[in-house]
Length: 266
Image (cartoon, one colour):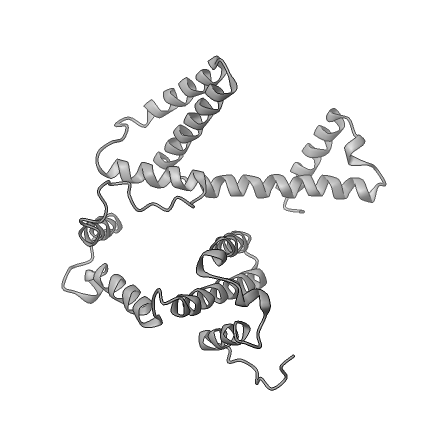
């Protein structure tokens, strides 16, 4: 173990120094084996953990998870250089140039309009940048996005071309139609396909109501988890095996926890 290393600076430079030592000759065997590709799934996981911390308003967790994401960014930068894929200079120049270019109302002579006009300008500039690279309006959406977020993104892109329902009320009819088609399906393969169509249509409905379907589902997941673990905790305090309760008893307990939650006591 090395004991001749001074504390690292509390800055991004400090993180890069840490990474350099971890993958050095005297560093960590596991870290030394990593590549930009092997680390990619872990970077995605860390980003999801950061999002969860932010949505939970957990400041200590936010601090920790931002640190983890920065560590992975520093790791990717170091590996990119060692694999001769890119340099720090190219990465930083690319992001600076892009955001200056896409903010002509800040760094150029254009006047700032409404938020919608600014979004339109952003899309126009981005389209010019990607001309010849992207052949479809829905190209460039990462396939690694969660399915609901991916559906929302391609629907928004398609909508910008005018491919969208004129009447949001029509979406409600489509949701009911897709639901009926699930139960009319003849086999599991058909049923799964129709279920996917239903989810896609529900995302569309959410989008038209300015609801982020991915965020909405994460909120419901957290709400269910909170209530369920509270039921288990309540049973443990009373020496009751939660799994052995009848469904009716569990429903009573669920409603009890829900009322307590609504009163802000949990």
